[in-house]
Length: 400
Image: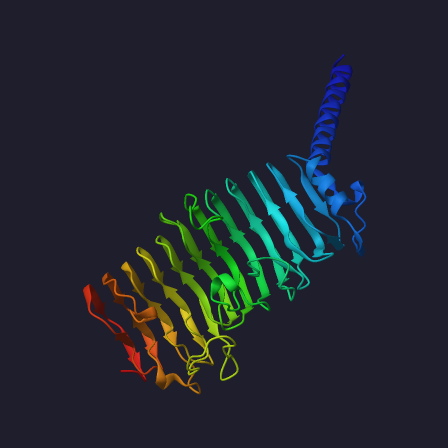
């Protein structure tokens, strides 16, 4: 009798484990789906747009897998509860266009993929109004540009575009590179303009609510240009604070600036900004003296901004490594800032306050502390009166 009880117990355990294993396997099968099952070829020649869009539209709540290959597309759209994951896969432009990927809705994830505009699409990702809870990780966004002046009225190449009424967006361990303007933008003074990541309202005349909880971290911005107006990250034209944290990123070969902050609320911390130019980075459409290599590492033209623990270095010189204008309650603390020793460093300061565009709004609530400032005409230069300013414990090396 005991023997039969043991056999029955063993059988029950076996059946239980088998059911559990089957359930887990079935759950795993339900959770992922390959774009190949929807007819995507991934050969770099076939237009895979329809197959990929069908996979996206039919797979809400699942992770859509891109096996190794190159997938040519026109434009795709992600909506609620969509996840894309690559296995050494490239999604590339198959023809000219304004955008490669549109993101709408909630709970969107993109991971382990490369998106290549092939210099014939203007925008990589466009994150639309109302989008939230978005994660972009371990992803490369590259080669977005156009030489066609008729492709768009505002042909500003952008890696990731974020408009208003968006929130909870994480961009982590991502590379944005080779975003380059080749067509003058008439609405921007007939200059060449490009952005790695661009936060601006969809409608500037009637801006949406500012983005909330945007985090850009552990990422690389490389080759944003030209010098006329090529910035790694730009935030502008919202009426409220933009709660954005930019931390632990690396910027190099950004022709004009790494960061341009024109709206309040930014935290800029722990970034490495490299001036990669020395006498070989020039303006095309500005008739102004070209006596520096990059305009700035960081430009702050807004209130309530913290710039802390950043390394600003490289072989070239800045007009000003940190450039501040028309701002209140700005903290510049514990940064290491230097021009290249073989650059034209003696022509310009390292931190400059209130010189851009001859603005008249007084700066107040400014704190500049614990910074190391090396190789500049001045360490800190005030070109106009300021109020309520604290300057202390800064170390000057080869500067005055």
